[in-house]
Image 1 (cartoon, rainbow, N blue to C red):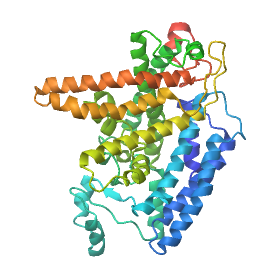
Image 2 (image 1 turned 180 degrees about the horizontal axis):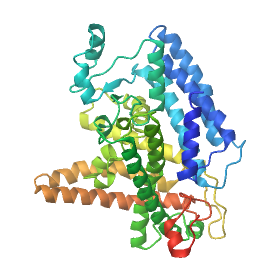
Image 3 (image 1 turned 180 degrees about the vertical axis):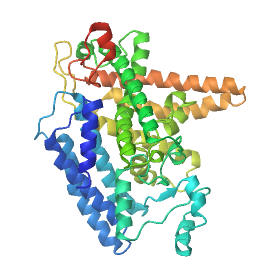
Image 4 (image 1 turned 30 degrees about the vertical axis):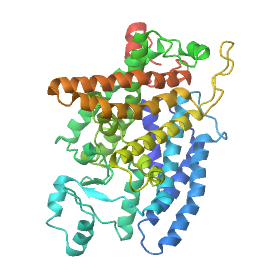
Length: 460
C-alpha cells in the first residue's frame, strides 16, 4: 500500500526518539485506508477529461476518506497507552489528512487550482536551454519572475510520481532534488546544502541528534521539577499562577520543546532517507528557519516557524476570503487573511485537545474539563497573535522606521519576543492543564543524561 512503508519508518522513529507517541497497530488500517483514498483523489486531479464527473468522484470518495481518518484518531475500538502524546500525535495525523481531503476534493472546485512543481534556481537555469516548444509553452504560461513552473504530467508514471510527491509533501519540499512545490516557503525553495559525503552527513546528523536529545532532556527535567498534576487540579491556569520568572521559563520551555518534538523525528527520518539513497540532501531543508533569530513577530510567523500547515490553512481559508467585497483594499485583505489563518489554527489545536482523556477530578477542581472543545487558554494564545501582528504593523514598525538600524532591529525584536513570551504563558497553561507535562505519563526521550548524572536514573 502507498502509506505502509512510511508508517513503518514513522513508528520506528517515534519509538526511538518520541516514546510518548506510541500508535497502536490496530489503528493503522484506518489511516492507510484514508491515505490511499487521498492518493486516488489527488491522482484524479491530473486527468483533464470529464472534469465534472471526476469532481463528483472526488467528493464522494472524500466521505469514506474522512471517516477513515476520524476513526484513526477518535475510535474507542482500540486501547492506547497512558501517554497523552499518543492522542495528540494521532489526532494531528488525522486532522491533516482530513484537511488535505477537503482541499483536494472540495476547495479546488472554487478555482481549479492545482499545485505545480517549480524548478530550483540552478535547475531552472539549465532548463531554459532544454525545454522544447510544447513544454515551454506550458511553462511560460505560468512562469513568474525567477521561477520555472513545470507542467503537470500527462503520462501514467508521471502522474503517479506527481501524486505521491504531493501527497507526502508537508512544507512543499519534493523527493526530486531539482524542484519544490509552488507553495514551498522561501528557505526551502533556495536551500542549498553543503557538499558532503554520506559519511560526513551521517556524522553531522548524529551530532545534531545528540544536541537535540540533550536539550530535550534539560527542558524535560525542568518542567518535570514542578508538580503540574497538583497545580492542574487546583487551577485552570497552572503556569500563570506561578512566580513571574517561572512563567517566563515555562513559556520558553514550551516553545523549545515544541520545536524539538518536530526536529527530533525529522532529523532521524531525513538521515535514514538520505543515507539509504531514497532522498537527496537538497530535498531535506531544516524544519525551521532559525526561529530564535526572528527580527519581528511577522518574521517569526511568516518565515521562521514551521510551515507544516501553510498550504492547508491557505486553501481552507479560501471560502472565507471570497466573502470579501472586490473593492477591499490590500490591507483589508491581508488583515482578513491573517484573521482567518489564526482562526483555523485555533480550531485545529482545539480539536487536537479534545482527543485527550479528561484529567481525574479533585476536591479543589471537581470539573477540570467542563467544556472539552472551548479551551480558553488555547483561544487566548492563538487569537492574540494576529492582534500582536496588527499592533506591530500599525505602531511598532512606523515608530521605529526612522531610527538607527541597530536600535530599530533591537526594539522590533524586543517587542516580538516580549509578546511571544507573554502570550506563550497561555499556551503553557493549556499544555500543563491538559497533563502534557505529567511526570508519570509523558516520556519525550528514553534515556536521560541529566537525570543519570544527578540522580543515577539513566532510563526514564
